[in-house]
Amino acid sequence: MTQTSDRASAADRRGARAAAAAPDASGAFTHRQIMTILGGLLLGMFLAALDQTVVSTAIRTIADDLEGYDLQAWATTAFLITSTITTPLYGKLSDMYGRRPFYLFAIAVFVVGSMLCGLADTMYQLAAYRAVQGIGAGGLMSLALAIIADIVPPRERSKYQGYFMAVFGTSSVLGPVIGGFLSGQSSILAITGWRWIFYVNVPLGILAFAVVFKVLHLPHTKREHRIDWPGALALITFLVPLLIVAEQGRTWGWGSTGALVCYALSAVGLVLFVLAERAYRDDALLPLRMFANRTFAVSSLSSIVLGAGMFGGILLLPQYLQIVHGSTPTEAGLEMIPLVLGIMLGSVIAGQTIARTEKYKLFPLVGVVFIVAALVSLSFIVGADTSVLVMFPFMLLMGLGLGFNFQPVILAVQNAVSPREIGVATSSVTFFRQMGGTLGTAVFLSVLFTRLPSDIGNAVADSAAANPELAPQLQAAAGNASDLSDTSFIQQLPSAVALPFKTGFADSIDMVFLIAAGVVALGFFVLLFLPQLPLRTQSGIQAQQAGEGPASDPAAHDPALASANAAGAAAPTSTPPPVDDADRTDRRLTEGGGRHEAAEAEDDRSEGGRHEAAPDQPTGLASVPADHLPDDVRRG
Image (cartoon, rainbow, N blue to C red; front, top):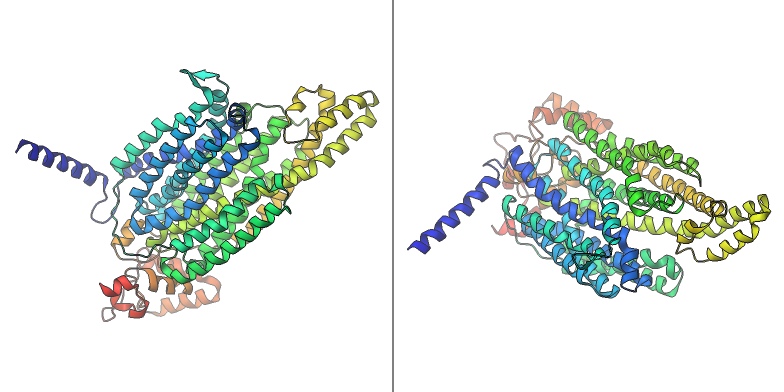
């Protein structure tokens, strides 16, 4: 009897904790509940973001200790492949079965992968264990943004999303500092210093798991779906060769046999993926009809373009600081603080302003202008003897542009799709940005190393002509520079001899900055087509509980989305609201190019975009033609 009553009381306590962390009957969360959940999400994201910067700082030390210098790139490539592939998988599966189990799974896998990485004895083992880490990291990034969309309405969400940018900014500063310190220690508690880079993730991950397990209780109605296994396998076939050649192509040669095989396999995978998605329709991993939604299509394309330009450009800043200025990885991380401050400041300004004005389109456009201006300016001022202090204002400007760009685009997508598809939409945009960044990094590094020999050769020739007495030393140093995969020799040269080599690097980096600016500028023209839709006042959970479709009924503004909602939403109102003279005027404005202003006026009249049907007209499921309903709804 006592044991039974103890079990009952324990169950009651668990139920009380879950009820305290759950929303009220309307699906609304209190600010305290949101901040508590946000704390667990940020801790999980911090793990993944910090890990990438820490490992990139210490990878050379790790490779030397494991006697696998020529294999070090695979430790990065393995993580990149699995984290990129699993990002859309997490989004789709969490839409089907709920966010909580998959976010907890992602944390657990990341912790296990971290422990295994710390135990690695060879570079092959490290690459395999980094792949395990990547499986977890893919969910930590994308699901956190989807969960925030579930619990916070779009009109308020931008204020909370600023915290995510703060996490990324903090990790980009702390990563090199922590990585440099730990990798520089011969041993800590009788364990090799670099192994602690992975072991520190374990207690942090356990804490994040405990917090999320306790506070994250989101209502979710399980729906029967087919799982798109053919699409997942085709996506792997498409991405793995593409990511491998992106990482290894510079070493192999972009026209080598290995690269050509990767191109062919990737092309086959892409064709198979499209065929699978067409066959699975609404159950697809990435439903192709979502691209008929202009907001989703524009955001996806801009994420690829801006991801390539931004990440490709940012990558070279620490390269310049370390190679030309001789900064250590730790020092380079600290010298990047203006960029981080700009990101944090930009995200706060954008978040607060969007919450007040409900306008998000302006910020990505202004952000692109800031990034282009910063990259062009850096291309003209960066030289072999440029002071780091001179670069700080342009780093700050670039950071502001990044802060203005990241979250508003995610917010626009989440606001424009059905609440049932927030997970797949969020993860898809994140996935496209990662793909753009990976490909941009590969291309820009290829451009850099292609130009380096000629730029260094020209600088050495000019220096030898101006200083004949240095010619023998310059020629000897140029022989050492034949293999530019190791640039550490530059820091051992006398300053006069090192100067032309630094000049050559600076000239090559200047060209890459200009190319990156051109790529980012393309994103401006793509973002011009981003619709400015009214922000809905309900969170994803509230909208699903109310049986509503997408934010502020975007179907009224997007015919393609209207048909998508009829097929995929649980209870949309497909019958239009009563039409009065004012509504007819609004529709004429819409057809004449004033669609967004008219939509906002209509949204104000209908209390956040919920159209009220005329009393005699069918609403909800009754208003949807039977052949437009999913099979599971028709059967019910």
